[in-house]
Amino acid sequence: MDKVSCGCGGGSPVQLTHIEMQAGPAPVLSTVVMWRDVLGGWRVRWGMGRMRYRVAPGLYRVGEPDKQSPVLVTANYKLTVDAVRRELAGLSVWLLVLDTKGVNVWCAAGKGTFGTAELVRRVEAANLAGVVEHRNLIVPQLGATGVAAHEVKRSTGFTVRYGPVRAGDIRAYLAGGMKATPAMRRIAFGWKDRLILAPVEVVGVLKPAIVILAALTVLDVLRYRSLSWRVAADFAPFLAAMFAGGVLTPLLLPWLPSRVFAIKGAVAGAVCVAAALIALPGGAIAAAGTALVAIAIASYMGMMFTGSTTFTNFAGARLEVRRALPPIVVAAALGAVLRVAAAFV
Amino acid sequence: MQYLLSGDSLVLDQALCNGCGRCEEVCPHAVYSVVNRKAVVANRGNCMQCGACRMNCPAGAIAVSTGVGCAAAIIGAMRRGDGGGASCDCA
Ligand code: SF4
Ligand code: SF4
Image 1: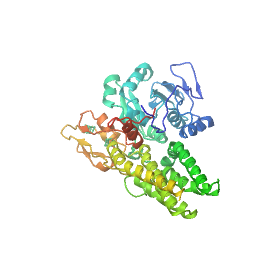
Image 2: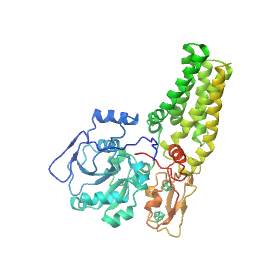
Image 3: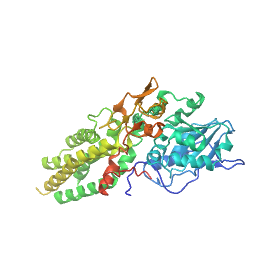
Image 4: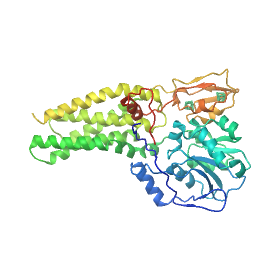
Protein backbone atom coordinates (compact mmCIF):
# COMPACT_ATOMS: atom_id res chain seq x y z
CA MET A 1 0.00 0.00 0.00
CA ASP A 2 1.22 3.51 -0.78
CA LYS A 3 2.44 5.59 2.08
CA VAL A 4 0.09 8.40 2.96
CA SER A 5 1.50 10.50 5.73
CA CYS A 6 -0.83 11.32 8.55
CA GLY A 7 1.51 11.89 11.41
CA CYS A 8 1.29 8.52 13.08
CA GLY A 9 3.98 5.97 13.73
CA GLY A 10 4.99 2.43 12.92
CA GLY A 11 8.14 0.27 13.08
CA SER A 12 10.00 -1.75 15.66
CA PRO A 13 9.44 -1.41 19.42
CA VAL A 14 11.36 1.18 21.39
CA GLN A 15 11.51 0.91 25.17
CA LEU A 16 10.37 3.87 27.20
CA THR A 17 13.14 5.86 28.78
CA HIS A 18 11.89 5.26 32.29
CA ILE A 19 10.41 1.86 32.67
CA GLU A 20 11.89 0.10 35.66
CA MET A 21 11.22 -3.56 36.02
CA GLN A 22 10.09 -4.50 39.53
CA ALA A 23 8.95 -7.59 41.33
CA GLY A 24 5.26 -8.11 40.57
CA PRO A 25 3.13 -8.85 37.58
CA ALA A 26 3.74 -5.71 35.53
CA PRO A 27 6.58 -3.25 34.86
CA VAL A 28 6.40 0.21 36.40
CA LEU A 29 5.75 3.18 34.18
CA SER A 30 7.10 6.55 35.31
CA THR A 31 4.81 9.56 35.10
CA VAL A 32 7.74 11.87 34.41
CA VAL A 33 8.12 12.80 30.77
CA MET A 34 11.76 13.68 30.17
CA TRP A 35 13.05 16.38 27.81
CA ARG A 36 14.27 13.55 25.61
CA ASP A 37 10.66 12.36 25.22
CA VAL A 38 9.52 15.87 24.34
CA LEU A 39 12.28 16.29 21.78
CA GLY A 40 11.41 12.90 20.33
CA GLY A 41 7.82 14.07 19.94
CA TRP A 42 8.92 17.06 17.90
CA ARG A 43 11.10 14.90 15.71
CA VAL A 44 8.18 12.57 15.00
CA ARG A 45 5.84 15.45 14.06
CA TRP A 46 8.46 16.79 11.70
CA GLY A 47 8.63 13.38 10.04
CA MET A 48 12.00 12.27 11.40
CA GLY A 49 12.32 8.75 12.78
CA ARG A 50 8.53 8.41 12.90
CA MET A 51 8.82 4.73 12.10
CA ARG A 52 10.23 3.70 15.45
CA TYR A 53 8.00 5.13 18.06
CA ARG A 54 6.49 2.25 19.95
CA VAL A 55 6.09 1.08 23.49
CA ALA A 56 6.07 -2.66 24.20
CA PRO A 57 2.40 -3.68 24.66
CA GLY A 58 1.12 -5.23 27.88
CA LEU A 59 0.10 -4.28 31.41
CA TYR A 60 2.03 -1.56 33.27
CA ARG A 61 1.75 -0.29 36.81
CA VAL A 62 1.65 3.45 37.46
CA GLY A 63 2.26 4.37 41.10
CA GLU A 64 1.29 1.56 43.46
CA PRO A 65 -1.88 0.02 42.06
CA ASP A 66 -3.74 -2.72 43.94
CA LYS A 67 -6.72 -4.96 43.27
CA GLN A 68 -9.16 -2.04 43.42
CA SER A 69 -7.19 0.34 41.20
CA PRO A 70 -8.70 1.40 37.88
CA VAL A 71 -7.45 -0.04 34.59
CA LEU A 72 -6.82 2.43 31.76
CA VAL A 73 -6.43 1.18 28.21
CA THR A 74 -4.27 2.92 25.61
CA ALA A 75 -2.36 2.45 22.33
CA ASN A 76 1.36 1.70 22.05
CA TYR A 77 2.22 4.88 20.13
CA LYS A 78 4.84 6.46 22.36
CA LEU A 79 3.44 10.00 22.11
CA THR A 80 0.07 8.66 23.27
CA VAL A 81 1.60 6.80 26.21
CA ASP A 82 3.61 9.94 27.10
CA ALA A 83 0.46 12.09 27.01
CA VAL A 84 -1.36 9.63 29.28
CA ARG A 85 1.41 8.95 31.83
CA ARG A 86 2.12 12.67 32.23
CA GLU A 87 -1.46 13.08 33.51
CA LEU A 88 -1.19 10.21 35.98
CA ALA A 89 1.42 11.66 38.38
CA GLY A 90 0.53 10.79 41.95
CA LEU A 91 -2.21 8.33 40.97
CA SER A 92 -2.10 4.55 41.26
CA VAL A 93 -3.58 2.84 38.22
CA TRP A 94 -3.00 -0.06 35.85
CA LEU A 95 -2.23 0.85 32.25
CA LEU A 96 -3.07 -1.76 29.62
CA VAL A 97 -1.15 -0.92 26.43
CA LEU A 98 -2.60 -2.50 23.28
CA ASP A 99 -0.43 -3.39 20.30
CA THR A 100 -1.56 -0.88 17.67
CA LYS A 101 1.73 -1.11 15.75
CA GLY A 102 2.79 2.26 17.11
CA VAL A 103 -0.30 4.09 15.85
CA ASN A 104 -2.36 6.47 18.00
CA VAL A 105 -5.76 5.49 19.42
CA TRP A 106 -7.90 7.34 16.90
CA CYS A 107 -6.13 6.14 13.73
CA ALA A 108 -5.73 2.62 15.11
CA ALA A 109 -9.40 2.39 16.08
CA GLY A 110 -10.33 3.35 12.52
CA LYS A 111 -8.19 0.50 11.23
CA GLY A 112 -9.46 -1.89 13.89
CA THR A 113 -6.02 -2.56 15.42
CA PHE A 114 -7.20 -0.71 18.51
CA GLY A 115 -10.18 -3.01 18.60
CA THR A 116 -12.31 -5.59 20.31
CA ALA A 117 -10.08 -8.56 19.40
CA GLU A 118 -6.81 -6.96 20.54
CA LEU A 119 -8.39 -5.69 23.77
CA VAL A 120 -9.80 -9.13 24.61
CA ARG A 121 -6.41 -10.72 23.81
CA ARG A 122 -4.50 -8.30 26.09
CA VAL A 123 -6.97 -8.65 28.96
CA GLU A 124 -6.46 -12.41 28.82
CA ALA A 125 -2.67 -12.29 28.27
CA ALA A 126 -2.23 -10.03 31.32
CA ASN A 127 -4.57 -12.25 33.37
CA LEU A 128 -6.36 -9.05 34.31
CA ALA A 129 -9.20 -10.93 36.00
CA GLY A 130 -6.62 -12.19 38.52
CA VAL A 131 -4.86 -8.83 38.91
CA VAL A 132 -7.90 -6.71 39.80
CA GLU A 133 -11.13 -7.53 41.63
CA HIS A 134 -13.40 -5.05 39.83
CA ARG A 135 -14.53 -5.63 36.26
CA ASN A 136 -14.14 -2.21 34.60
CA LEU A 137 -11.92 -1.10 31.74
CA ILE A 138 -11.51 2.59 31.00
CA VAL A 139 -11.09 2.94 27.24
CA PRO A 140 -10.39 6.34 25.66
CA GLN A 141 -13.54 7.49 23.94
CA LEU A 142 -11.83 7.90 20.57
CA GLY A 143 -11.15 4.15 20.69
CA ALA A 144 -14.90 3.46 20.45
CA THR A 145 -14.71 3.33 16.65
CA GLY A 146 -12.80 0.04 17.00
CA VAL A 147 -14.17 -1.42 20.23
CA ALA A 148 -17.62 -2.96 20.67
CA ALA A 149 -18.22 -2.64 24.40
CA HIS A 150 -20.91 -5.32 24.54
CA GLU A 151 -18.65 -7.86 22.82
CA VAL A 152 -15.78 -7.16 25.22
CA LYS A 153 -18.21 -7.75 28.08
CA ARG A 154 -19.39 -11.02 26.57
CA SER A 155 -15.82 -12.30 25.98
CA THR A 156 -14.07 -11.14 29.15
CA GLY A 157 -16.71 -10.14 31.70
CA PHE A 158 -15.19 -6.66 31.82
CA THR A 159 -17.42 -3.62 31.32
CA VAL A 160 -16.00 -0.98 29.00
CA ARG A 161 -16.38 2.54 30.30
CA TYR A 162 -15.48 5.20 27.78
CA GLY A 163 -13.19 7.75 29.33
CA PRO A 164 -12.55 11.30 28.22
CA VAL A 165 -11.36 12.25 24.71
CA ARG A 166 -8.35 14.11 26.12
CA ALA A 167 -5.64 12.69 28.37
CA GLY A 168 -5.76 16.00 30.27
CA ASP A 169 -9.24 15.12 31.59
CA ILE A 170 -8.30 11.66 32.95
CA ARG A 171 -7.64 12.92 36.47
CA ALA A 172 -10.96 14.75 36.68
CA TYR A 173 -12.73 11.74 35.18
CA LEU A 174 -11.29 9.38 37.81
CA ALA A 175 -11.92 11.86 40.63
CA GLY A 176 -15.52 12.19 39.46
CA GLY A 177 -16.14 8.46 39.89
CA MET A 178 -15.54 7.53 36.24
CA LYS A 179 -18.16 9.95 34.96
CA ALA A 180 -17.32 11.95 31.84
CA THR A 181 -18.95 15.34 31.59
CA PRO A 182 -20.39 16.25 28.15
CA ALA A 183 -17.39 18.54 27.59
CA MET A 184 -15.00 15.61 28.15
CA ARG A 185 -16.82 13.70 25.42
CA ARG A 186 -16.50 16.33 22.70
CA ILE A 187 -13.60 16.73 20.28
CA ALA A 188 -12.74 20.40 20.53
CA PHE A 189 -10.11 20.79 17.78
CA GLY A 190 -9.03 24.27 18.84
CA TRP A 191 -6.36 26.38 17.18
CA LYS A 192 -3.54 24.71 19.10
CA ASP A 193 -4.69 21.29 17.93
CA ARG A 194 -4.74 22.55 14.36
CA LEU A 195 -1.44 24.39 14.48
CA ILE A 196 0.48 21.43 15.89
CA LEU A 197 -0.34 19.58 12.66
CA ALA A 198 1.19 22.26 10.43
CA PRO A 199 4.63 20.57 10.31
CA VAL A 200 3.00 17.47 8.80
CA GLU A 201 1.52 19.61 6.02
CA VAL A 202 4.74 21.49 5.30
CA VAL A 203 6.90 18.36 5.28
CA GLY A 204 4.35 16.75 2.95
CA VAL A 205 5.07 19.29 0.18
CA LEU A 206 8.79 19.71 0.80
CA LYS A 207 9.94 17.53 -2.09
CA PRO A 208 7.67 19.05 -4.78
CA ALA A 209 8.52 22.49 -3.37
CA ILE A 210 12.24 21.90 -3.92
CA VAL A 211 11.52 20.76 -7.49
CA ILE A 212 9.47 23.90 -8.21
CA LEU A 213 12.06 26.24 -6.71
CA ALA A 214 14.83 24.53 -8.71
CA ALA A 215 12.77 24.88 -11.92
CA LEU A 216 12.23 28.58 -11.15
CA THR A 217 15.94 29.07 -10.71
CA VAL A 218 16.60 27.47 -14.09
CA LEU A 219 13.95 29.62 -15.78
CA ASP A 220 15.41 32.77 -14.26
CA VAL A 221 18.90 31.90 -15.36
CA LEU A 222 17.57 31.29 -18.88
CA ARG A 223 15.79 34.61 -18.87
CA TYR A 224 18.35 36.90 -17.29
CA ARG A 225 21.45 34.95 -18.33
CA SER A 226 22.67 35.07 -14.76
CA LEU A 227 21.64 34.25 -11.20
CA SER A 228 20.28 37.48 -9.76
CA TRP A 229 18.23 38.83 -6.86
CA ARG A 230 15.18 38.21 -9.01
CA VAL A 231 15.34 34.52 -8.16
CA ALA A 232 14.70 35.33 -4.52
CA ALA A 233 11.83 37.61 -5.52
CA ASP A 234 10.43 34.77 -7.63
CA PHE A 235 10.52 32.38 -4.69
CA ALA A 236 8.43 34.67 -2.49
CA PRO A 237 4.96 33.88 -3.94
CA PHE A 238 5.60 30.14 -3.68
CA LEU A 239 6.81 30.33 -0.12
CA ALA A 240 3.75 32.51 0.60
CA ALA A 241 1.53 29.80 -0.94
CA MET A 242 3.09 27.09 1.22
CA PHE A 243 2.60 29.24 4.29
CA ALA A 244 -1.01 29.89 3.29
CA GLY A 245 -1.80 26.22 2.63
CA GLY A 246 0.24 24.63 5.40
CA VAL A 247 -0.07 27.08 8.28
CA LEU A 248 -2.79 29.68 7.65
CA THR A 249 -5.42 27.25 6.37
CA PRO A 250 -5.23 25.00 9.47
CA LEU A 251 -5.06 28.02 11.77
CA LEU A 252 -7.92 30.00 10.21
CA LEU A 253 -9.99 26.93 9.27
CA PRO A 254 -13.28 27.97 10.91
CA TRP A 255 -13.15 31.46 9.42
CA LEU A 256 -12.10 30.75 5.85
CA PRO A 257 -15.09 30.60 3.48
CA SER A 258 -16.76 27.37 2.22
CA ARG A 259 -16.90 23.84 3.63
CA VAL A 260 -14.56 22.73 0.87
CA PHE A 261 -10.96 22.69 2.12
CA ALA A 262 -9.55 23.23 -1.39
CA ILE A 263 -11.46 26.53 -1.54
CA LYS A 264 -10.28 27.53 1.94
CA GLY A 265 -6.70 26.87 0.83
CA ALA A 266 -7.18 28.75 -2.46
CA VAL A 267 -8.60 31.81 -0.68
CA ALA A 268 -5.76 31.94 1.87
CA GLY A 269 -3.33 31.31 -0.98
CA ALA A 270 -4.75 34.04 -3.22
CA VAL A 271 -4.38 36.64 -0.47
CA CYS A 272 -0.81 35.67 0.41
CA VAL A 273 0.33 35.25 -3.20
CA ALA A 274 -1.19 38.58 -4.20
CA ALA A 275 0.63 40.25 -1.33
CA ALA A 276 3.93 38.69 -2.41
CA LEU A 277 3.40 39.70 -6.06
CA ILE A 278 2.52 43.28 -5.15
CA ALA A 279 5.52 43.56 -2.83
CA LEU A 280 7.92 42.20 -5.43
CA PRO A 281 6.42 42.94 -8.87
CA GLY A 282 7.58 41.39 -12.15
CA GLY A 283 6.20 40.94 -15.67
CA ALA A 284 2.46 40.44 -16.18
CA ILE A 285 2.65 37.02 -17.87
CA ALA A 286 5.12 35.69 -15.35
CA ALA A 287 2.97 37.03 -12.51
CA ALA A 288 -0.15 35.35 -13.92
CA GLY A 289 1.70 32.04 -14.27
CA THR A 290 3.14 32.32 -10.77
CA ALA A 291 -0.26 33.14 -9.29
CA LEU A 292 -1.93 30.13 -10.93
CA VAL A 293 0.72 27.65 -9.80
CA ALA A 294 1.06 29.11 -6.31
CA ILE A 295 -2.69 29.26 -5.63
CA ALA A 296 -3.03 25.68 -6.92
CA ILE A 297 -0.37 24.62 -4.38
CA ALA A 298 -2.15 26.39 -1.51
CA SER A 299 -5.47 24.86 -2.57
CA TYR A 300 -3.97 21.36 -2.76
CA MET A 301 -2.36 21.75 0.65
CA GLY A 302 -5.68 22.94 2.05
CA MET A 303 -7.37 19.85 0.63
CA MET A 304 -4.73 17.61 2.24
CA PHE A 305 -5.64 19.03 5.63
CA THR A 306 -8.97 17.15 5.48
CA GLY A 307 -7.11 14.11 6.82
CA SER A 308 -5.91 15.94 9.92
CA THR A 309 -9.27 17.21 11.09
CA THR A 310 -11.82 15.64 13.37
CA PHE A 311 -15.02 16.35 11.47
CA THR A 312 -14.54 15.34 7.83
CA ASN A 313 -16.02 12.14 6.43
CA PHE A 314 -15.10 9.75 3.64
CA ALA A 315 -17.96 10.45 1.20
CA GLY A 316 -17.48 14.20 1.54
CA ALA A 317 -13.70 14.00 1.08
CA ARG A 318 -14.14 11.82 -2.00
CA LEU A 319 -16.57 14.36 -3.44
CA GLU A 320 -14.11 17.16 -2.70
CA VAL A 321 -11.22 15.32 -4.39
CA ARG A 322 -13.31 14.60 -7.49
CA ARG A 323 -14.49 18.19 -7.82
CA ALA A 324 -11.34 20.05 -6.77
CA LEU A 325 -8.44 18.00 -8.07
CA PRO A 326 -9.08 18.56 -11.83
CA PRO A 327 -9.19 22.41 -11.57
CA ILE A 328 -6.10 22.35 -9.34
CA VAL A 329 -4.16 20.30 -11.89
CA VAL A 330 -5.37 22.45 -14.81
CA ALA A 331 -4.48 25.70 -13.01
CA ALA A 332 -1.03 24.41 -12.12
CA ALA A 333 -0.36 23.20 -15.68
CA LEU A 334 -1.60 26.44 -17.25
CA GLY A 335 0.44 28.46 -14.79
CA ALA A 336 3.57 26.44 -15.56
CA VAL A 337 3.09 27.02 -19.32
CA LEU A 338 2.70 30.79 -18.78
CA ARG A 339 5.72 30.85 -16.51
CA VAL A 340 7.90 29.05 -19.05
CA ALA A 341 6.58 31.27 -21.88
CA ALA A 342 7.43 34.37 -19.84
CA ALA A 343 11.03 33.27 -19.69
CA PHE A 344 11.31 33.46 -23.48
CA VAL A 345 9.35 36.63 -24.41
CA MET B 1 -17.62 22.69 12.16
CA GLN B 2 -19.44 20.82 9.45
CA TYR B 3 -18.18 19.26 6.25
CA LEU B 4 -19.63 18.18 2.89
CA LEU B 5 -22.22 15.39 3.27
CA SER B 6 -21.82 15.38 7.08
CA GLY B 7 -24.10 12.72 8.56
CA ASP B 8 -25.61 11.83 5.19
CA SER B 9 -25.42 8.07 5.57
CA LEU B 10 -26.46 7.83 9.23
CA VAL B 11 -29.63 5.75 9.73
CA LEU B 12 -31.17 4.99 13.10
CA ASP B 13 -33.87 2.34 13.41
CA GLN B 14 -35.76 3.46 16.49
CA ALA B 15 -37.85 0.29 16.52
CA LEU B 16 -34.73 -1.72 17.45
CA CYS B 17 -33.38 0.80 19.98
CA ASN B 18 -33.45 -0.28 23.62
CA GLY B 19 -32.50 3.10 25.00
CA CYS B 20 -29.21 1.99 26.56
CA GLY B 21 -27.52 5.31 25.71
CA ARG B 22 -24.24 3.89 24.40
CA CYS B 23 -24.52 5.89 21.16
CA GLU B 24 -24.86 9.11 23.11
CA GLU B 25 -21.88 8.10 25.26
CA VAL B 26 -19.47 7.26 22.41
CA CYS B 27 -20.31 9.99 19.90
CA PRO B 28 -17.61 12.68 19.98
CA HIS B 29 -19.87 15.20 18.24
CA ALA B 30 -23.04 15.05 20.36
CA VAL B 31 -25.16 13.77 17.49
CA TYR B 32 -27.58 11.77 19.66
CA SER B 33 -29.79 12.40 22.57
CA VAL B 34 -31.85 9.75 24.30
CA VAL B 35 -35.42 10.87 24.95
CA ASN B 36 -37.90 8.60 26.78
CA ARG B 37 -35.57 5.60 26.38
CA LYS B 38 -35.27 6.05 22.63
CA ALA B 39 -32.23 7.46 20.82
CA VAL B 40 -32.88 10.45 18.57
CA VAL B 41 -30.55 11.91 15.92
CA ALA B 42 -30.48 15.46 17.22
CA ASN B 43 -27.49 16.98 15.35
CA ARG B 44 -27.09 15.07 12.10
CA GLY B 45 -24.95 17.77 10.51
CA ASN B 46 -22.20 17.27 13.11
CA CYS B 47 -21.72 13.58 12.30
CA MET B 48 -18.32 12.71 10.83
CA GLN B 49 -19.39 9.13 10.10
CA CYS B 50 -16.76 7.54 12.31
CA GLY B 51 -18.91 4.52 13.13
CA ALA B 52 -18.36 4.51 16.90
CA CYS B 53 -22.11 4.50 17.54
CA ARG B 54 -22.78 1.65 15.12
CA MET B 55 -19.92 -0.35 16.65
CA ASN B 56 -21.26 0.05 20.17
CA CYS B 57 -25.00 -0.27 19.63
CA PRO B 58 -25.89 -3.63 21.20
CA ALA B 59 -29.25 -3.65 19.42
CA GLY B 60 -27.83 -3.19 15.92
CA ALA B 61 -30.12 -0.19 15.46
CA ILE B 62 -27.57 2.05 13.72
CA ALA B 63 -26.22 1.99 10.16
CA VAL B 64 -23.63 4.43 8.85
CA SER B 65 -21.07 4.12 6.07
CA THR B 66 -17.61 4.92 7.34
CA GLY B 67 -14.15 5.61 5.98
CA VAL B 68 -11.34 8.09 6.39
CA GLY B 69 -12.23 11.68 5.50
CA CYS B 70 -8.73 12.18 4.15
CA ALA B 71 -8.00 13.52 0.65
CA ALA B 72 -4.45 12.13 0.72
CA ALA B 73 -5.71 8.59 1.37
CA ILE B 74 -8.40 8.97 -1.33
CA ILE B 75 -5.91 10.23 -3.93
CA GLY B 76 -3.58 7.37 -2.92
CA ALA B 77 -6.39 4.87 -3.52
CA MET B 78 -7.25 6.48 -6.88
CA ARG B 79 -3.64 6.16 -8.02
CA ARG B 80 -3.73 2.50 -7.15
CA GLY B 81 -6.95 2.22 -9.16
CA ASP B 82 -8.85 1.28 -6.02
CA GLY B 83 -11.92 3.50 -5.76
CA GLY B 84 -13.37 2.22 -2.49
CA GLY B 85 -10.16 1.19 -0.76
CA ALA B 86 -8.97 4.46 0.70
CA SER B 87 -7.39 3.79 4.05
CA CYS B 88 -5.40 5.98 6.34
CA ASP B 89 -1.89 4.61 5.96
CA CYS B 90 -0.86 5.76 9.38
CA ALA B 91 1.49 2.85 9.88
S1 SF4 C 1 -26.79 2.39 21.37
FE1 SF4 C 1 -28.41 1.52 20.07
S2 SF4 C 1 -29.84 0.63 21.50
FE2 SF4 C 1 -28.52 1.98 22.72
S3 SF4 C 1 -29.62 3.94 22.76
FE3 SF4 C 1 -28.25 4.04 21.00
S4 SF4 C 1 -29.48 3.32 19.27
FE4 SF4 C 1 -30.56 2.72 21.13
S1 SF4 D 1 -20.80 8.01 13.21
FE1 SF4 D 1 -19.51 8.94 14.81
S2 SF4 D 1 -19.95 11.13 14.67
FE2 SF4 D 1 -21.59 10.08 13.57
S3 SF4 D 1 -23.20 9.80 15.06
FE3 SF4 D 1 -21.98 7.93 15.11
S4 SF4 D 1 -20.46 8.29 16.71
FE4 SF4 D 1 -21.34 10.29 16.20
